[in-house]
Amino acid sequence: MLSIAAANHRADRQGGVRSVRVAVLLALLALSASAAPTPAAAMSTAGPEQLAYTLDARATANGQLAGSLGIAFTNTGTSALSEVWLRLWGNGPAGCRPQRVKVTVLSGGTAASPERNCTALRVQLATPLAAGQRGALQLRVQVRLPRDNDRFGFANGASYYGDGIPVVAPLRDGQPDLDSFIALGDPFLISAAAWRTTLTWPAGLAAAVTGARQAASAAPAGWQRATFDAASARDFMIAVGPWRATRTSRDGTQITVLAPRSLRGAAMLRAAASAFHSFTSSYGSAEESELYVVLTPGLISQGMEYSGVVLSEPDPETVVHEVAHQWFSQLVGSDGWRTPWLDETLTTYAEMRQLGNLPQNCDLERPFADYGRARLSWTLADFDRDPQDVYGAIYDGGACAFAALDEEWGGTRFPELLRAYVAQYRHGLADTAGFIAMLRAAAPSDYDVDAFLTFARLTS
Ligand SMILES: [Zn+2]
Image (cartoon, rainbow, N blue to C red; front, side, top):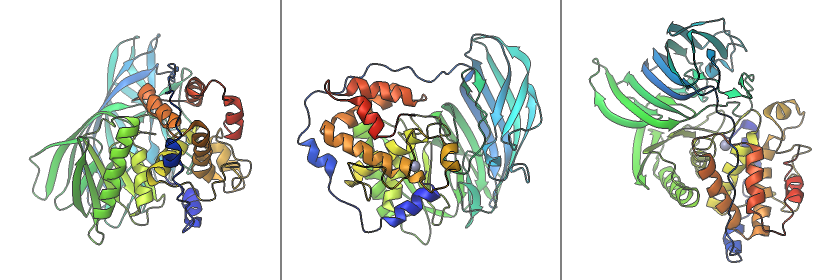
């Protein structure tokens, strides 16, 4: 996403972007050796994994959704699984009063009372699941959006259900991820999963849903219905609104800009398609048959990414940023609460490289000069506690640090490392230790990686 803090920071740099095209210039000086990273260990994926969600829901024109949600999963751990935790991220901002997302377990288990400000729900399985066995839950889900122009909200006739459908909490070190919601950034840890969604929504409104749209099916008068299939998605989105569509295709992916009728989407479609093609060339296929870019003037977070769907202000920089997230946060996931830099620094780096810019005030000698004592290694909780507004450190500060690395490494070695990183963690979860291991493996033999880690504030 682009946070409020980062958006403010970005607003500061109007007219000040340095178009030095460092990456392009330095490509001429590129070293001939290519990155040859050794495989790094991925974050543990034991627990209720190999997830498949089947959602059949109706979304109204005024921000309400109701339907059934089936969740199938395999116990990939080595001992029996007696419970799973669901995360109800839509309850993050408001907590329990009012509870925006309500779940009833219809079969497969019994729910306890919601915890963590109604963002976590423990479900005792009806029968413990032996190692390697597959189980399922059937839920009824009701969502009532707040009247906010936000990723989970209803505004200007548009409904955004970002991360509003319950998902299974992955295990970390054998324990379910139960970190509290923090309004800053994207405090989510979500396993890639298959999604099949059958959505019924009002005739006359457009819909953007994670997954490839299948043929429409019969719907009651005044409604339309279609099924959307995603083989592997992470952050899930349904958006419904009074939009006009503009489309093109790149690299086998249909790219659709959905815009309010007062906006023309053509320039944003060109920015999205150009970025999508560049990122596919640089970092490998996004493995998406469809990508929706929903233009959202006044969105609180300025932009936000989901698998196959992004929300963005009608501004090319934001569009490019959110498209880059299809690689850095959706295809390659990470722990948004503990390592927020992994998504935002790498996304901002890709964005800057695509735009041929450096972040404003990017001093290649001192990339964090504007960010107090903030570190890339900080968690969201660290940023939330810091009295200064330095969250931009993981956006422009981090991107500036890696632009400096580009200067030292010759412009192509680090992008090649990112391509290998995407290949390594595709559909999985990356972490800082794994990234650093790949950085060490890719570095020229005489390069002081430890000095760079200190420079980039990646040490704790
Ligand atoms: Zn972002």
